[in-house]
Length: 71
Image (cartoon, rainbow, N blue to C red; front, side, top):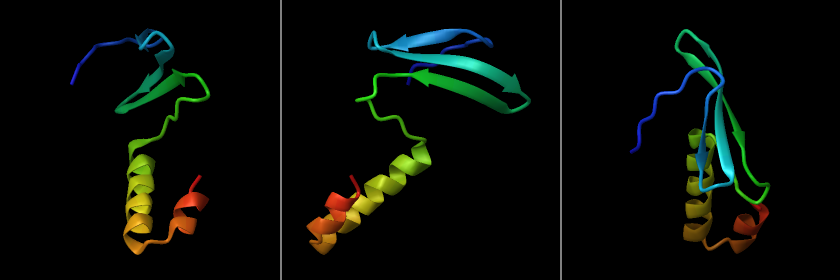
């Protein structure tokens, strides 16, 4: 894992086309802005994990229609 220090208003760039900017810092919360192409999915980790679990359950149940409905 790469660890970087950034101040409010500073950014970092990933793969030449994704920009992550620190928008605000208040106590133990940080607001992060992400500018990425529309074809790049961006999820909060807990949502990403739910999607993975749903996909896994659909594959295990053999219900391909349920998997198709996720998209």
